[in-house]
Image (tube, one colour):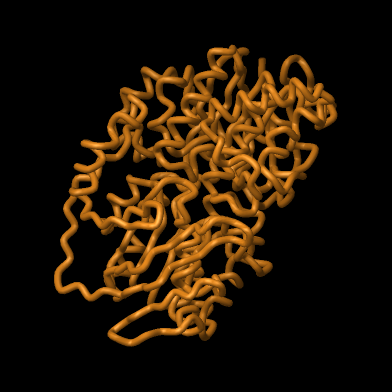
Length: 490
């Protein structure tokens, strides 16, 4: 059982209310699966940190009240003892890895518990089979895609089999097939009687697993509902609460662009050292001054594709042809701006405002503040970027791309960790950038976002690409992929 009594928490800066919690009284019986939802910054991640002991043992702040898990008071218990009971999948899975190869990582938690080798091997093999992860074994952690890292993190926790599972945005970078595997794994934990706490924005894949929905607003529990009650809420009501749809988005709009000129990329070939070729695409055409969504399964090389076409991968000899002229790699770097999937890699300064300013060719404080205001970030202008929530960091990275004023803007999962309101904000900004003549290429698994930005769609398969208009893509999914989708998202 998990019990929070009269809990108040304020992060280190007392003037900063983001993520703070106020008067939380909550009891989660053993075996219950609970969904925490709400807008970015409402306190979902903070509650997960209270349950797994990272607050107060890792994150500093002012905490009052009592947190008990399995009868033990978290504040007075050593973190390693709490970890035996509570397993966590973090919002950024990279932050929880300790090994450089995947098999060792999946076994790591069991080795720390002193479990016999034979039992470790048995549990690792069982988890790998259940997650259909054979292709991810015995590989370097550094060569995995974001979605593949997420799957490894889920497998690590599953192998250790704690009594409580805490998942913070576990589906953020997963494709539809991987979400089905995650759904099935959560179902298995539920059947084993485990207690499951999930903080999520993407809701459709977990509805038949949830026993309870807790909606947070400004650090307080605003609603505590049964799933049936929550499912009665209309799309309009959900969106007014800042929540995504509880049904998988159906792309129905037909986006027709006229008089399109294409930017052509040739010879997109790349492979990691001593590894197999990841990309081998002879030619791909991207509509100029349009928005193009790149989709495809986890691990196919979508992020690497972006790095290659913008010139970041020196070993890749990709050539860009724009307006009939060949553009060399260094010029590609000057024409393109990439927002990475893990935005922590590109946050360098001491404040959010400075982060935007250094992206400008000529610093303009007033313009930088306008960009921040447009993304609901102006109040955080003086904050250190690393201190922000995952969704807020994502928006800061988007702000830097806007400030760069480059002609070609590349985004890798820009809506990861974003609630409905801020997803719409980003989509509206994409439309404005398109109207200004920018070419936007976005890697995403977020179908709701693709619908909002009216994107052309390119599906990346192994060494091939397939172009779709939106309506054509939805028809293809309905005909060929329906059996692969979880029943609750069809």
